[in-house]
Image (tube, rainbow, N blue to C red; front, side):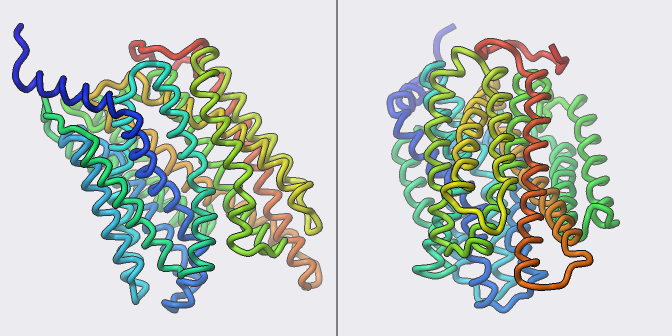
Length: 494
């Protein structure tokens, strides 16, 4: 059949994108970094924001929760929108919306405006994050180059939270808490300029109807699940509000799966997640995020409250881990993954991460950074680097162009749900351990410090167990050998 004018234009657009693929990768990494670091860059600024806007301790968590609820619940919809309306257009829309919401949040003179801005940030993050990752999967298709690209992207995904801690500390200490939000305007401006200059316009070959029933059940189900985890963080796992939202979330997601089986145009084609390699990679991504939140949450508290580090010094303390993580991530995706495949790399990385957590369990009120904190950070960085890029690459491999957006959104959803679960679970564990330690002891600053560290180390033990369990399950699910573009296979352990 003769090539149509539209097909010729698309071929030229794909060729132009391929020629500029490494510059496009840099732009996509900037967009990804903005979204990832925004989960932590605001954390260090929270005390200053609370002082300026006069909101209570009980309200403080909503600055984080408003963002995560909107982000986590709308990711699958955001991914499908990029498939329907074009990834370039969707990415630009997400970047501009995120920047405007950041500007409003930075200028907020009341708590309500700040919370509303954070929620809108989450909405646009859910639009831009899948678009960025799906562009990466469609532009880099040659295995060797794909490994390099996902190595860089995976390093950003793994290190972004740590970079956010450092950036948040610097901005808060030397400028203002408001700059933890204003800084997004810089990231977004650079990314939008790069997208408009480098990415070609592509015509959409198919415009299937949006799965409204699937969209509603998935969005509300994910909202209930993430909100239930946040309730567990505040009210405990036995609270009726926690159990109610978690049960509703699970039930709605079960309905969503049932609907997707029969839908002509499903929001999430089930073959994307029932492939063994993709399913194992998504589980690895979720597991890694659960455990990583234990590091950034409790190690930040330990460095600032126990070792009396400043916000900037706390951020700098994570730099060795970030450096090792970047090196491990790029090496694993370019050299090791094509040779050994994800079945060896991912479980090994999760086991190394577990060992890093075990090293943190030895911390006490007299520990030092060089002797007791740094070794765990280095081991953890190597482990997370072995997981992050190979898992993201494997989770998106074999998803065709028409479903690349929603396929990428499943990776982002695993990250978001993992972060919410990790925060709720590990914070509850730490709080319970601290309370138990204090029972029957005379109150004093020394005892309070010892109790806090006991809570942190208990959470580290749990995180180590989560990493180890994830390694075992992923070892059963993932296939041996280098990943390949294979048909979907049901999840049956080898």
